[in-house]
Image (cartoon, rainbow, N blue to C red; front, side, top):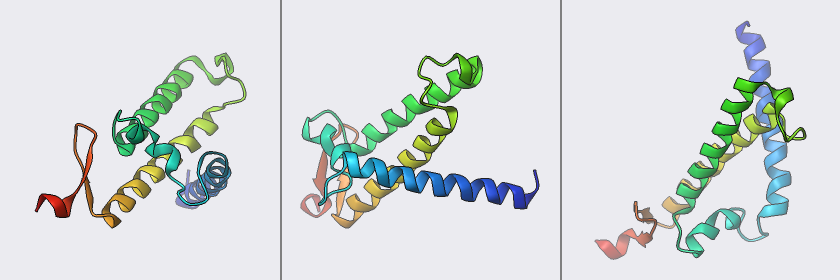
Length: 123
């Protein structure tokens, strides 16, 4: 694959991922907070939103690994292709970065035990 061909694949994947994330955000997010559904694990006291996204990413990678090993045609969920899983992975990485930026803007730190505290309060 030439660099030009790779760029075309990259552009196509980014365009598809962008369209998909906006459709899913419409269904999952809120008008006020696009990341509200990801923060639910914090509201429940389970873990940080970032950790929740990493768990979702692990699930997607496991699915991609299995589909790659057994073949896409052997999947029990035929309406979710390898491409769908790849796009989900791209979008979860982007959502992870959006959460990091939102946390930085709020000046909060994330701790391993899953709690967010104001950095200013600790200083």
